[in-house]
Length: 125
Image (cartoon, rainbow, N blue to C red; front, side):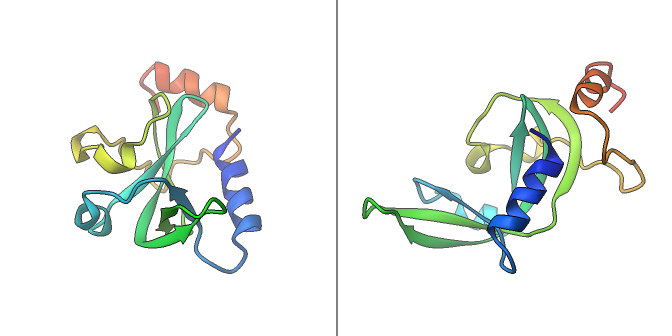
């Protein structure tokens, strides 16, 4: 529902360890991801935040199939709101297409998502 909900879920689910996101395929551009790459999170049709990718690890699913776990920095970095449908952009999003990080001085915690979306549509956020 929101960046706050995402942060709360990760904090509860990964208590005391780095969060991870498991995906079916091992990335072909592994070196790029591990050299400062981030996973961008789409929340209600907007990219609102990102997490730096720290590493990749194998995970075997309950079906016995090997998968790739993206090990993430627990720090969530808010970005400028950018309309985006769900995508697997962690593999292919070029730097030029990445939404810029919000300045740390910008206070968006607690701002309703609807207001943030409207400000983004106006080019004010």
